[in-house]
Image 1 (cartoon, rainbow, N blue to C red):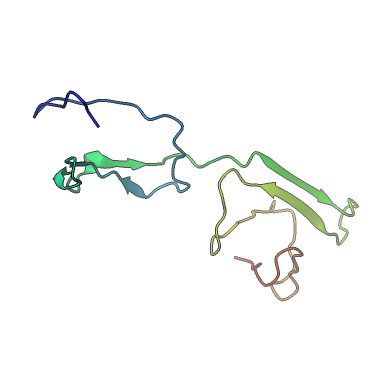
Image 2: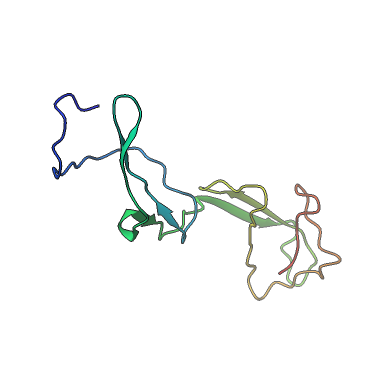
Length: 124
């Protein structure tokens, strides 16, 4: 509400702090601006316009990641334990991709096992 009102054509600028950005890099997120009267009826509304879009350009950082091997002997078959704490939520249907160093040989997809997430692991 604006007790003294705003005249037609006046420019209104303001900042809103502590907003959590969208979690994805790439898509355009569109803002909509609407003005309504004191009874809730629409007076003005923004139309689709690239000036009302914002795009996230930098992915979040995974701040906590650790990896260890149960057997550190050269050429041995072992189990790797990975612990990841993402900075951005991972929703149902999302994919977590792990890229192993080229020197590590992964088992075939039929022998791949991952505890903690049943039927949710595959090789790409």
